[in-house]
Length: 194
Ligand code: XMP
Ligand code: MG
Image (cartoon, rainbow, N blue to C red):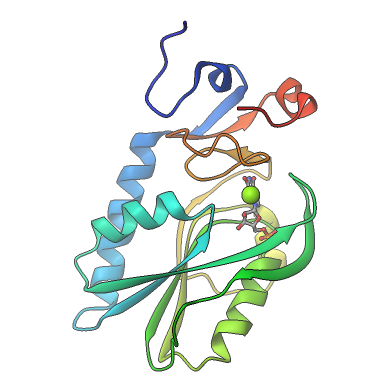
């Protein structure tokens, strides 16, 4: 058995091409983003809306890094037709449990690729009349600039390659990796596996 870090099954370690963002870098960036959010929302109460499933790690770490009083809600939407390419078709798989009317809403996203999912989601949430609506995305790809979405808090701008780890999956696998990285061409060709 290979010796790997927690959250890194030995088989998955071999599938990683390049680590783009380390666990330490993620932790440091989330702390910095949390400080900004705390300053911006001073004296208010936040409603964090996490977009399942990719944003679970960001939600867990960001929410505990914040000092602002907050509650959490989750939404699940599907935007990908296949495992690695965007279809542009958005569907609500799980809606919010309660009203966001009059609330200060911060949408927590894992990654913005084409921006199509987010732009659709913001339009949908805006129609529910929150007091404010902002977005925090841990990762953003270059393609995102083509869509006119205003993302207030961005963790890292990364290259446009398909990435996994820290919540991001390839066919539901690789989410527990503590870092974010690319997959080897062989791993992509082989297809998702545990
Ligand atoms: P769009 O293109 O609508 O896509 O901005 C956003 C959603 O697509 C997923 N996504 C990824 N998931 N690795 C992943 O595991 C990636 O490189 C990647 N790029 C986009 C993700 O769910 C995001 O919310
Ligand atoms: Mg996914």
